[in-house]
Length: 99
View 1: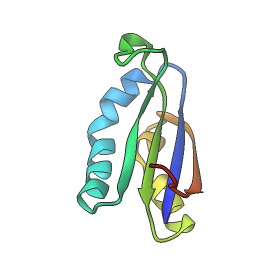
View 2 (view 1 turned 135 degrees about the horizontal axis):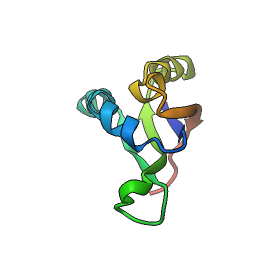
View 3 (view 1 turned 90 degrees about the vertical axis):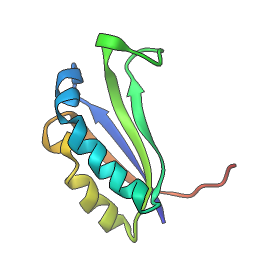
């Protein structure tokens, strides 16, 4: 089943995001390699594809896991969460209906 990860950044997270991005991306790339990612990406803090120093307000990830417990366990090991980039991560079941 798919699960959505709604991740909220702390204020002024850009420097921390930049520092811990390689570890964050490596975990996501592993899910891509396994064919388990539907979509993933950051949410700009302003209405711009390149928010510059305004940075990001969080991220959304939709990925496949065997259970909600497995998805939450994966989220608990997220480098951005451990490094303090994310203030919170909410994990919920997700059903794709469109397209």
